[in-house]
Image 1 (cartoon, rainbow, N blue to C red):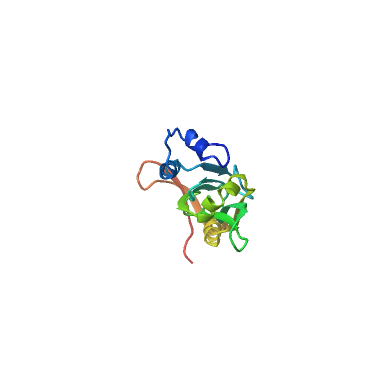
Image 2: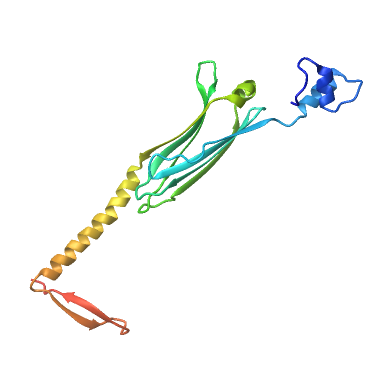
Length: 201
């Protein structure tokens, strides 16, 4: 809606570049044909631990909303996450603030899965349209909450335990006085391998 003199339909029509004579029906049609006003809320970088992220919420005066988020895991163990944006001054009839949420999982260095998670959600909410003036000036709060993903934790520990067990086995095998080590030609005949053998008791 263009800026105009409060209460003056004539000034509004002038701002909409309408010419006289002006009917109420034509004025309503012109107003309805205006593009929706828009506002964007950006969180900037969020991150309580090895997980970092950001969220962007775009809202329009017709009630439509577009939420996009990016979350990245930089550590060894993955995490489940919730990233949210709350408009603290836009509340429903029960006093609940308008909140936009994305949930997901990012995986660590030693786990199977992606380190990055990008999400995009488009929709609408009548509170945005009915409280548009409040939306534009609302206090905004962004949060990223994470919790350790138990599957990632197991996937990260198992390879380390396996490697440790192999290393211990090799040391015990080589330390046995019955073990004999020598250089031998490789099976493919292209090189030399250092091979240790131990007679079976």
